[in-house]
Image (tube, rainbow, N blue to C red; front, side, top):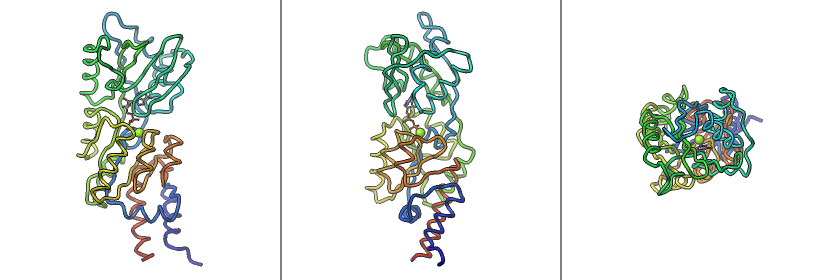
Amino acid sequence: ATMPPLLSAIANAGRHGVLVKSAVVMERLGQVDAVALDKTGTLTEGTPRVTAIRPPAGAGPAEEALLTWAAAAEHPSEHPLARAIVDAARNRGCALPAAEEFTASPGTGVRARVGGAWIEVGAPARLMTEGTPMATEVAELVTELEDVGHTAVLVLRDGVPAGVLGIADRLRPDAVATVAALRALTGRTPMLVTGDNPRAAGRLAEEAGIADVRAGLLPQDKVDAVRGEERAGRKVLVVGDGVNDAPALAAAHTGVAMGRAGSDLALQTADAVIVRDELATVPAVMTLSRAARRLVV
Ligand code: ADP
Ligand code: MG
C-alpha cells in the first residue's frame, strides 16, 4: 500500500530531525497561525557563559567564593544558566562543596544548603524582597549588566546579597531566518515569551527581528500569554525547552520541544521534539504538514 500522506509527512519530518508524535500532531502543525518562542535555549543557543562576577564593593566575598557558592547550589540544576555557572567555577578550578536540600523554582532560581549556609541563586526581581540589605548597590550592579543585554543572576547567602553574576547567550545561527520564515507562513511575527528580564530579552528580540516581547514571565504567565492569543482566535505553536515551558507546551494548540538540551518534562509534554537542534526545522515541518493536508483533503 502507498503510505497515507500524514504518515509520509511524519517520516519526512524525521528526516528533517523532528520527532512528530502522532498523525494528529502532524496535521495540527499546518493549522498553526501564531508562534511563541521561548528565549533561553530556544531562540538562543542555550550555552550561556558567565561574563561577570561582581561581589558588592567593600564587605562582599572574593569573586572565587561567590562563584563557588553559586555553582555548588546550582550543581543539581539542569537549567542552562546553572550549567554556565558550574562550568565557570570548574574552569577556575574551584572545588564545589556538596549541595543539600536543593530545590528549584522554575522561572525563578534555586536554593540549597552549602557548607551550612542557605544559598539562593536566581532572578534578582524575584529574590529581592523589600528591606534586603544592600538593595541599592545590588540594583545598580543588576542594571549595569542588563543594560548591555546580559542576564543578571543574584546570589544570596543566608538572605544577604553576596553578589551578582552576569551571563550572556548568543542567538542561534538560524534564529533570524526562522523568525522570517515563521512570519511568512503565519502572516504574523512570532512572539518571545521569557522569564528573563525585559532589557536582556528586548535586545535579543531586536536582533532576531521580533517586536512582540513578553518578559519576566513565570511558567503560568506563559500559559496566560498562549491563552490570550487563543482567545483572539489564533492557534498557537509554542517552542520551548525548559521545565518552565512545560505548562505552555501543554496549553498550546501545538507544543514543540528543543530536544538536545531540553528538559525531560518539556520533551514528554511536547507534541513534537526537535532532535537535530535546528530551530529552522519548525517552519519546515509546518510546511510539510500543509502539503500533506492538501493531499488528505
Ligand atoms: P526562559 O523563559 O528565558 O527560558 P527561565 O524561565 O528558565 O527563562 O528563567 C527565567 C529567569 O529565572 C532567568 O532569567 C533567571 O533569572 C531565573 N532562573 C531560573 N532558573 C534559574 C537557575 N537555575 N539559576 C539562576 N537563575 C535562574
Ligand atoms: Mg528556556
